[in-house]
Amino acid sequence: MEKAKNILTIRRLTWAVLVLAGLLTLTAIALVVSQWNRSRGPVVRPECETVVMVSAGDTLGKLLSDQGFSARDIDAIAKMLKKDAGVSTLRADNDKIEFIRATDDAPVTRMVFRPGPWRMVELTCDDTGAWHCQAHDIERDTRVVYRAGEIHDGDSFYVAGQRAGIPAGILAYVYDLLAFEMDFERDIRAGQRFSVMYEENYQDGAKVDNGNVIAVWFQALRGNVKMYRFRKSDGTIGYYDEDGNGAIKSLKRTPINNARVTSSFNLRRKHPVLGFTRAHKGVDFRASTGTPIPSAGAGRVVARGFNKGHGNYVKIRHNGSYETLYAHMSRFAKGVGVGTNVRQGQTIGYVGSTGMSTGPHLHYEIIKNGKHVNPMTVKLPAISNLGANDKERFLNYRHVVDDAIEQLADRPDMFIQL
Image (cartoon, rainbow, N blue to C red; front, side, top):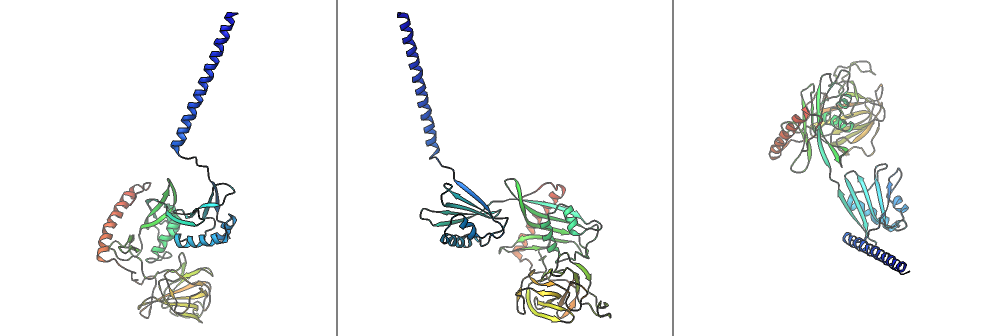
C-alpha cells in the first residue's frame, strides 16, 4: 500500500512539473511576439482599394459622385487637378483612378490618378476634410536603339521601315520630318538606304512606349538627308543637319502625307477639263473627299473663297517672300478665315472636287516673290540655324551621336543610354 501511494505522489509531481513548463513556454512565446510587434510599430489594418478604368462617356464628376463625393468636393477636386496637376480631361480606356478607404463602408480618404504611364497624381484628405494634391513624375529607363533598312522594288517607305523593325509611330514622325526635304511619291527608289535612331522607354524591365527620334538618315535622290535632334540653350528643341543648320524648312513640299501625286508642276500641261494647253502652276495630290488639309507652314490667311477654276480655296502668306495656295476643297476648317494666323500642320480645310476638277484631290501651289515655283524642286529656307555657342555644343553632341550609331550599327540587338 505504501508503494502504491508513493507512485501516485510521483505521478502528480510529474504532471505538475509538465504543466508548469508548458505555462512558462507559452509565457515566453507571448513575450517574444509582443516584443517583435513593438519593434515593428503599430498594427496597420489593410486599406480597401477600388480601381476604376475610365470608359467612354465618363466624366470626373460622374466617377466621383459614384464613389459618394459631395458636389462641393467634386468641384474643389476638379479645380485642384487642373491647377496643380494640369489635368482637365479624362481619356477613355487609358486613364484609371484608384479610390482608397479605411474600410468598405468608409468615405474615400485618398485617390491616385494616373494620367499617363509617366505621371502620377495623388490626392489626400486631411482631418478637416480638405483635399490636397501632389503630382509626381515617374522615372523612365530610356534606351536608345538604332534601326536601318533598304527600299526594295515596289516598296513604300512605310513598308520598308516596318521590315526594318521601326514602330509605326516612329515611322510616321520620321515621314513628317523628311517631307520637308523630299517627295515620298516620286523620290523613292529601290536600293535607297535609311536609318533611324530613337528612344524606347522602359519601366521595371518592360517596354512602355517609344520616345524621341534622335537622328535620321536617308539616301535621297537630291543628296543624303541627315537630321539630329538637339536642345538649344534656351530650351527649344529642333532638328539640324551635320553643320548645325536648321533641317526643318519653313514650308513642306507635300502637305498631305502618303498622298499620291497625280499631276506635276508643268507650264505647258493640257488641261483635263478645258482640253487645251494651260500652265499647271502647282502639284495635284490625290486624296479622298474629306481628308484634312494641313497648312504647309506657319502664316496668315490672306484669301479664302470660291472661284470657277480653284473652287473652294485658301491662300496663306508665310513671310515677305512665300505664299501657298490650296484648291478644290470640299469645305473650309472651322475658324479659318481671312486674317487668321495658322501654325504649321494646322488643318485649314478638307479635300474635295470643287471648281474645275475631275475628282477629289488637293491642288497645291507655292508662290515665291509673286512667281509660281515648283514645290518639288524649289529650295526652301530653314526655320532657324544655330548661334555660335549652340553650334559648338551641337557639334560636340553630334560626335557623341555618330559614335553611338557606329557602335549600334554593328550590334542592332544592343542599346545605349545617352
